[in-house]
Amino acid sequence: MEERLQKFLASAGVASRRKAEELIVQGRVKVNQSVATKLGTKIDPARDLVTVDGRLVSAPEARAYYLLYKPPGCVTTAADPEGRPTALDYLRGVRERVFPVGRLDWDAEGAVLFTDDGELANRLAHPRYGHRRVYLVKVKGDPAPEALARMTAGVRLEDGPAQALEAAVHERAEKNVWIRLVVG
Image (tube, rainbow, N blue to C red):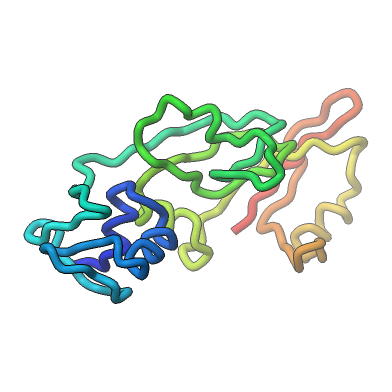
């Protein structure tokens, strides 16, 4: 079955799709001994011989999936321009080139899936598939029912409008309340 060369290179763990496109444009990729410089070139991984800088590239035989409980105090990105610790630092012993599916903020904690399976990552993260995400948020005090209703009606955040599909008190503690938020 044919696929785009840059997608094949990314799935083989050579580089991200964008970096793979750069390798192709730079003339560093060959398909059956011919330099491939055209983006969108189609190959058949079962028949075509692909090399990058003279090194053979093989399709991965198996995919890698890691579920990491990300602690607060690190970012969920492959590399941080500000030099902060990343969640990938916890996966240093992993041989595959994995990336996070979704993200959690610096001070947030929770489960994050890391994989080298771009197709699965797209299906899980792209809004068109409508997967729900559940968050437990700790707030000070006991929010009024109107505040929870505002979350489901929609609020304006720094990066644009946001609307929870569900917002309800999950658990009350002595000084804090845990709110269960479901977003699409």
